[in-house]
Length: 170
View: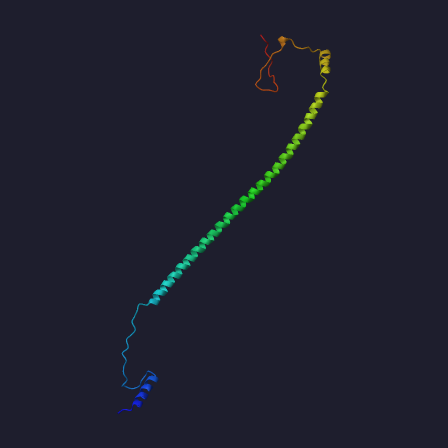
């Protein structure tokens, strides 16, 4: 009978030693080759690359849109600033012109008052009796008779200019 302790020692020696055994009596292991699965990692890598490319394109598109949006926003802000500046400039001009108009109206009112004062002083200084006496006595003027007066109706007021002699009345 084989000594059981020797068998155990041999087994222990085999299992504890390396898996490589020397000699021609070594038993060949039939190991199955691993199944060739479709390379999922390559597909996942391709999908990740496609996703990265899509994200990169999206980022570029968003950057371009953001840049255009920024340019448009700057343009609108510039236009708004220009319109506000022009509005304030016009308001300033209106205020200046309004002040000038008020000053000119005050000047006009004072000139009218002065003119009225001069006109009243001229009217009070005229002596109509002296003018009548000078015209009648020194110059020999007389009032016209009824037949000598010709009435003329004019559409315009103020005065009449005479370009020709007045025709004799029939």
